[in-house]
Length: 337
Image (cartoon, rainbow, N blue to C red; front, side, top):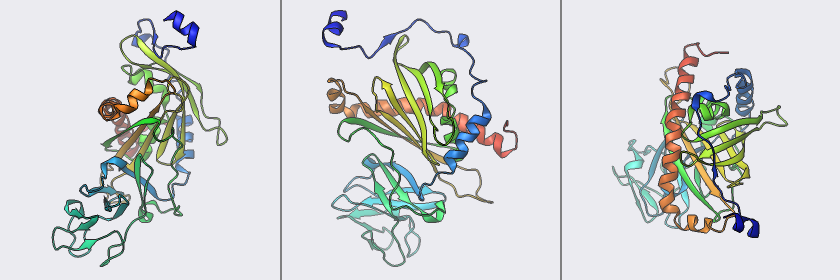
């Protein structure tokens, strides 16, 4: 292997590290200052989203497939594709007698209500009005002006990703009893990584916290654990392009330009009587590499996606508990700071 590296410049993606003792890590609680995290969250919350919300994976809404139902901010939404693959979206209740359109059928690209046969082709009809919708190739977005309450934008602010066709993507979805800000705050606390997720991260160091509006990124050195002692060290940057989105981008090391987009979509409405909040975490992992062998990964992407979702699911099992705990403390006035 050494001869190959010297001859071609090739380097192994994995590094071997010594045995680690979880309790022997350098504590990070003094660096993870509540005020710093709160300021980063405040800046993120002030950014416009144009009333656009992520509702799921693009490939889940298939041409010729059944309609998909979602709830955003207490509003029912139905999505389907026309016979040419164009995405459609609108209110999830039939305007005639309120049938759940998610349970209806798509016939030749037209959504046909299963109660009385009202046919919707995506245009206004019988009091049913479509919602603006956007398919970025990985995720599906819907614009709900009544929920967002902002100045609407013509299209969502989609983060920059690796080139389409040169990456492998997977989308994971989970639901927690919290608000979007609790999900975002979790991601704006990278200091918890090696402590809370030792099965996935080791040697995590925040090398540069945000310095304000002009430099609002967390820069982190971290090693992703592959097996017990084999790791992949990278430098990553965390930013918040919108109030409900946190973007992690690998800026140095293996898989540079790969991104993890975490989108927090409110499911319940706001205000008195709304009950306990529920938020969907929609996380898109878009992995890329300039190694020649990565072409094989693209070729077997359908087999890799369940593994990628399983990895994200393990992390979010813990992180949703973190976010739910944060909401429980906030809602009872017991949150520190």
